[in-house]
Length: 148
Image (cartoon, rainbow, N blue to C red):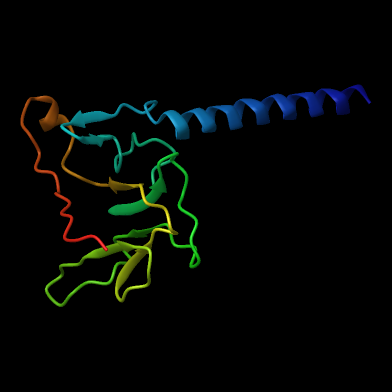
């Protein structure tokens, strides 16, 4: 009986510590050495053997959040795109439409919210040691083409 209670206590402590550490890492986001370049934030260790345990193995993701930092609820349960699933034009270019009503192609529904946050995560980029030396790495630009 004593062994069972001790094991149960150890399991509860491990679960609390593990879930607490995961919560802090996901909500604070600064635990893994971010590097800020203008309005962009990069994590130079992503894509290396020193990468943090929460890195996804994709080139980029674009995710739609509400102003409280939660995924936007919508009728098709789509909250973002990855570079592997995006529909591209014949020349390799693409565009993503963020709108409340359905559109053809890469449509990201806003679920009726008026204000939202688009978070673009870049993986396996050239940001790293050269950036720390003062040389700027060219970062992508986002263009708003129209609102409806």
